[in-house]
Length: 280
Image (cartoon, rainbow, N blue to C red; front, side, top):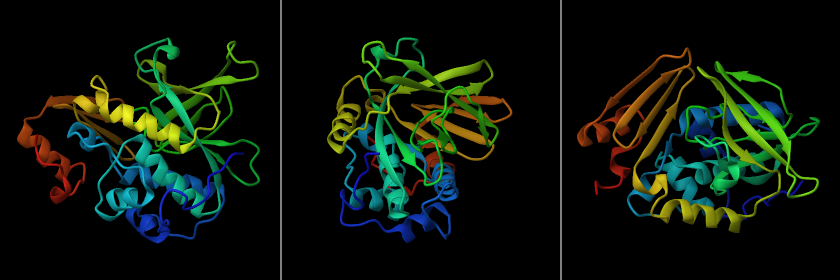
């Protein structure tokens, strides 16, 4: 598997500080238990948020900057930031991985109409026959809370959330396959994003990050998307609309005022008040 050299994107990864941030004490190692614990702990601790792009700032993907923002000052981030941070942590434990890019397909049945603007990870685990899809940065109620093996048509349940992967051959590229992550909800199985296992490199990620943060019609450029996951609840604030989804199926939605939004970001999402961008 194509892997990335530890520390290649910054001066060094501070594993101890990361583990303290996500509340996941050691020991850690190059094994499935570590992958699962770090994945779940980061999802449950570090919120998904795009406040920088909304305020005209392209998030830095430099490892030192990621650690300062997501670990030291306890901000959140979106897919590129979140998954690059997890990748650095996994490499620090001895696991190898590759970066993946995917097409978000929520709301369409034609994946090819969507650009590759999502990032995930494919992780090798010693002694395990299948590689694992890891993704702590998908900003939707259908996000993974734990990694799942790259095996088609198999249901995986964690924290009362169901996921599965579908596999289809791509007739445009001999020998390749398109994988689709699906989640189980009130209406049954719905697709979240599609991807191939072709490795992406940091320049690919940097271009996608720039596009998502600057393209005028990008949903992450025009309004805030802030989400927080807990074992039994998913909080989603998109623009001014707050949706609270419980794993048992109940959903509550209401509209917040600008003043309520800032208070909510601090009290419920857990973002530091002194690190929030100034209102535009």
